[in-house]
Length: 267
View (tube, rainbow, N blue to C red):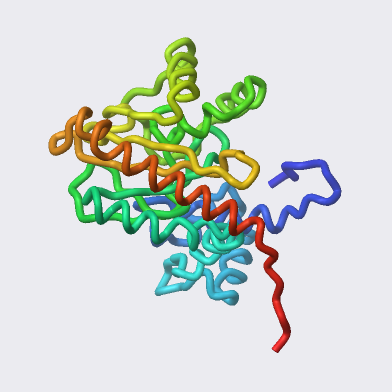
């Protein structure tokens, strides 16, 4: 494979390692060497070396003639979340919110034109789409995404929306152009977003921003319900006030967390 970046500081081997990890998509948890090579767009010898390295580091395992990732891969994402301190700050407020609503709540951040889930407290529900830490969805079709997109400057918004989605699903309906512009303007005006079955049938949610000590939006938090069980009116009138209260508490705690020096003292 030719180099994908002319920068002399770019390390192609690391990029190929991530290519292999990302080749293990939903429904392809276990693959042969040939399948991994094809999925990652690499030559078989290169894919083999990467897999053997991941296996030696504990990120992959081999059973018979197939390879699979191990749970240790989760450390890669958890390191990011833990480094921000957002999960530790948000968790008690999310758990309280779930206790009050009986519905799942999640925190997501923007990555290109997608949202990525970085924290979640869920309740058992039969819903159209499975959600876990690391799940990606197209941002314009989600309440979380609209909250995050609404905070961007026009040039940044255009750049983000121009990036192709890397989500593994196609939204049922994705607002574009004037419709999206109007939706984001409404989010800016009222400070929250509600979507009704735009992402998938049966998925209805409301989201609010999470801010740091300088008022910048660092993430968004939502409450998700099943459309057949919870009306838009109940979501807006009963759950939204609880969400706004929880989001404000998370933001206040996160601002305090960021203002306190964190020093490691040798034992």
